[in-house]
Amino acid sequence: MPIEILPRSGAPRVLALAQLSNSLGDGAYYVTSALYFTRVVGLSPTQIGLALTIAWAIGSVAGVPLGALADRRGPRGAAVLLALATSASVASFLFIRSFVAFLLAVCLYAVAQCGLAAARQALLAGLVTPAARTGVLAHLQSTLNAGLAVGAALGGLALHHDTPAAYLGVFALDAVSFLLCAVVLLRLPAVAKSAARGKGEPRLAVLRDRPYAVITALNAVLLLRMPLLSLAVPLWVVDRTNAPGWLVSALFVLNTLAVMAFQVRMARGVSGPRTATRAVRASGIVMLASCAVFAFSAAGLEPWLTVAVLVAGAVLQVVAEMQQSAGSWQIGFDLAPAHQVGQYQGFFGTGIPVARTLGPLLLTSLLVVWGVPGWLLLGGMFLAAALATGPAVRWAERTREAAHHRVPADA
Image (cartoon, rainbow, N blue to C red; front, side, top):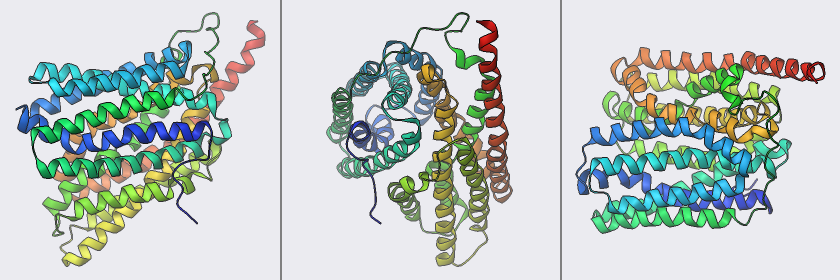
């Protein structure tokens, strides 16, 4: 069976092309930005970390009102404007020479990125039938990984030359990629604005939806797998195992290629809340197994056997990632009211910046400091969050049924 990356023609393909365009630039940016701002601009790693923490914290808060704005004003226009804002924020990196300027630029970048993610989800909801959304999102994830992989290779060329001009070329490429994303999004048909709020309905209703908040928090725990692969596993491989350092890069490539090749297939069985919660539950079990295997890699085995164990752990991790992604996409959409998809997706999407902000400190404390017991505790956290997702989804469904039954009585 051939690998499927781009979806079939129509709105899903246009969305995928928009995703591909900006992910190319982002892939190059991710692998070069830290070195540029430390070596060329002269910022310290502490300053960069502080600025990024503040920026993503602000971005996570801004995602909800920007998603609500997309609901009210139309998601296509909002997505285009936010793509242009992201492009402008990246272009400003070309001129940054101080910490304050860097902080302001990355705050704009994080806010625009979080808002763009929410607006895109609202746009997808308006253009794709509910039954097809998870499948389309799987294609978009495959496209994202493909773009990041190619972009990272382009960033590698800049790292090879290691000159200010090479790094600035990467930032220019990323800025242009978001301009192209905005142009591609304009090819989509406009989606109707949401209906006006009902009497007594709060402007940001998602903030009062306790079941959805619980589900979002559980999803944030499950998303700790993101800094696990990019930060914790590399530190573990280098500090606690006898595996060669190049394995870190190989494990990252393995993850990227696996998602590209198999995310669409993994998502095919997810079509509603029941199948989605089963997928999330399965991801927790597999993630626990992955953590146990990673812990075993520190057992002082022969180097080749250590490599095999680490590869096995990475394979289990990426299987769990694809299961969790498919399940969470379905749940996040199914429980969002049709006229408030933007703000609900903006809130659900806060799990990503939360995981990026809190994950590094938590994971380094658990794994680098505690070692093997930390791996087992982390696996237990993944399993507990996954098992709790099913009851939380059922709670959310009951609250929606109760609200539906109250409507005639209030009319």
